[in-house]
Length: 217
Image 1: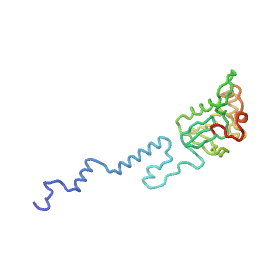
Image 2 (image 1 turned 180 degrees about the vertical axis):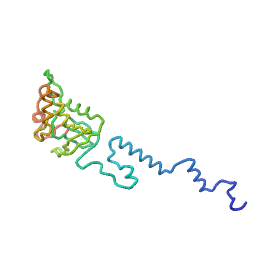
Image 3 (image 1 turned 180 degrees about the horizontal axis):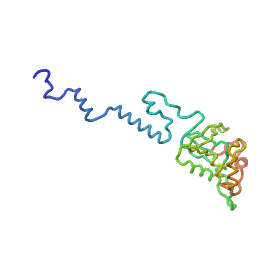
Image 4 (image 1 turned 120 degrees about the horizontal axis):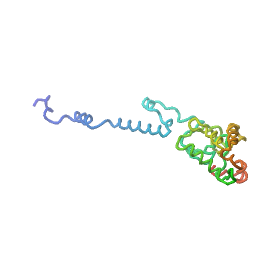
């Protein structure tokens, strides 16, 4: 048998066998890894963390993506600590310009019955947020090292919403941003304005030592 036909009746050479196996059975491992990465990025975007990851175009081009968020903004899923305090990514955030009844605070409704107005404020805020991401725009840092911020659910100002529902008051000592919402809630007798209550700042003064951080702070 001449040299040119040495493989005519036997097994194909090793290199040819590899090509045949590739065509018949599989894709390159790099393609599988790339598909997995695309899937992970898609899930991240659906979960609300899309800005923390590069876009696929940036990744393929080797470019750095935009920062995860502005230095003065924190965005993510929020846990409600009380009616005016959230926690996002382990960071406590105090809602700017408002003051809600404390968690242990009780108020009286229109019939003179006591109820836990602080607890109701926290539950109202938690129901409003649900499992949607919240974006908080930093305004200051308070003495408890919390970020003081205006927090939004989409385009809705949650600080304003709480005051408009009578779940919190405008904290005039620090801001007059939400005075009009308080006036509307009082006129409509919403929330705490249905009955009697002690202003949250006065309630704290009578129940907590001045130099000790309040519970849940």
